[in-house]
Length: 548
Image (tube, rainbow, N blue to C red):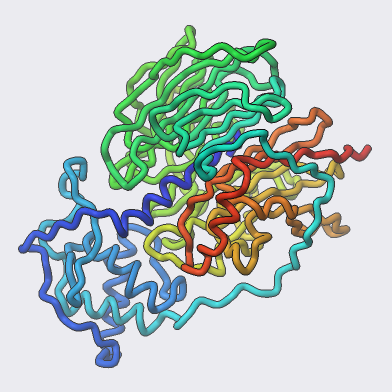
């Protein structure tokens, strides 16, 4: 993500909560009779029919979910019960399937009548049960993580709170030497100075999901802030979110308390906002990822010469689930394009080619599996061939397939020049949540910093933060040596920003601790106290030097 804000965890935590906090609605005409699921009675014909049903129904909405993606238990106890209501199956085997129903649920979202028979639903369950593994394999054969502080100086804020750390968004202002952090439990936007002392505390009534600078961050002076307010933490289509513009004056002495201007309200859980000239008229516009729940969109707001924005949505994609976007001239035709990652059922990375008038044509760059847990991307030319490659993380693990997955981690996909992408490199990282490229050690090669929010902290505490330093290979093969900085094991990092805070030409790293995240496995709760006693944020100051 271009500005270093990554607080999309709220969406995924909320999906986990939806398995507990839920409205169960069971119209009689859609419920199927209860029957005991007994896989020992399945016939070959039944299993084959289940496969055809999966290809017909599941593939109509998203990529075909291969049974090998999850274990038998996860398919039967979590994933397929979540799918059932979408096909009009609200109860089976004596169990009420989870789904939400409220005044904001889109009309017709759930079918009025069951779309398949009881025998067909049973066949679908048996297909996944008999073709899925008993357990998922453990990823092996990857380079050992080195524990080393390297050239970083870890620093924590001079700040204590009565509640555990719950930072959801963070932003480095290198020129003004300020750090902006949103604290959910304290309902505050905190502003820290160069010495990491608290300079200002601004009360916030809602959860902040994203912080962006509207004016150039390369210059010191008053900072115009664009803040996205999520609205509901739990899955909801209630229009309680909004975008707000404010400013902070970091003049000598405490900055003045800013005024507030709501740009647009009645949004359904906006998670990220970016700014750029989307209709090529010379003025900045806003691009909003309105994640939502059952409904949502990717849309833009038109800006004018006065720096104000029209509160009228220009819809680019009328689907929920978009979490991250990048504004750039991807096609090199002089017109503004958009690349966006969307993560609901149809998990894909899309290119929206701009026509110069605010209209965009969509095509798919990459498509991922239903259980991929797509969490972030960044465009970067890794092999220096002039084409944009893709850095991608897969690791959301708070949906209806909660389990450590061997395919979660950090990926590099190379572009052949015709937007055909192939996987070049992968490193397994449970719960991988964000990754950034930079030359951290100043050797002229591209490195990667990555965080995890659903890590196996008890058995692999080092995978909460990994720094991949690029190897210098004579044949230009892309490989990295993974490192963990010991101090990073004291927090559960949900947001990361990268910028040259120290001013030495090398990027520093800001990590934000949300210590109350859900545990993938019950035993992980043993680590909760470590994170609760950790800092609100950790600043890794890069004390290295740039090689000539």
